[in-house]
Amino acid sequence: MRIKVPQDKFHLCVSLLQPSRPIFCTSKNADGSDHVAPFSWLSPASYKPPKVALALQNERSANLSQSLVNIRREGEFVINLPHRGQEQKLVQASFLQGDYACKFDRTGFTRLDTQTVKPVSIEECKASLSCRVIRLLEDFGDHTLILADIVEASYEEECYGDDLCPRLDQMEPLISLREYRFDDHQRHEFIDSAKSYLVDVYYDENHESWKKG
Image (cartoon, rainbow, N blue to C red; front, side, top):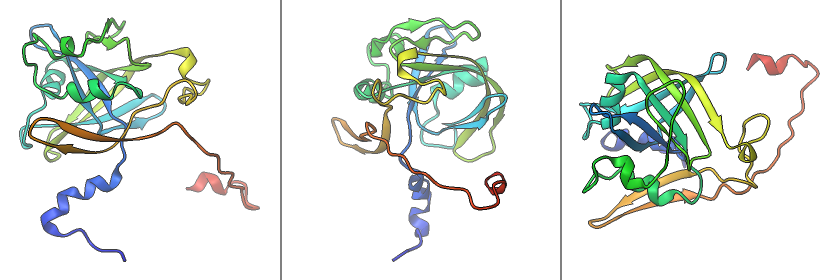
């Protein structure tokens, strides 16, 4: 039986779009130090030329994203793609700095300089996309939508095919489903992405029909 989402829980309807693929976003703090935080509201926005859309919490949400503060100021950021085995660091990157001068240091990740933007990428991630902001849509809700050009991309050759899709026999992407919060820890549920399957769908007699979708 299909039911409607009630108004008192209507904000949860975006969870119907789960699961998501989280990323590490690296940016530059005002003092020049490196910042890293995990996000999952990322989408391709154009193929030629390649562009992305990233949504980050703004002043109207419960917490203003420091990454958004940095991106507003600098106009640049790097998307780093984590893989299975980096779950702990992914969640820990969302915590406050604690005793560390910057959040990047707490992760223990290795900084990898990029050629086109100031923020560093993460050497331990199998791929990264350097991005430069085109436009910020601020009046969008409790998140600001960041539209950006991809100006540089790099990847580990053995982990991706010629079409740049992941090779699951070499690397499993992190796929996130949900999280639970407790007084002393968080519990995150991930999906095992080790298997794929093929489906053949044949054209009808009008072979041009696939272009009209």
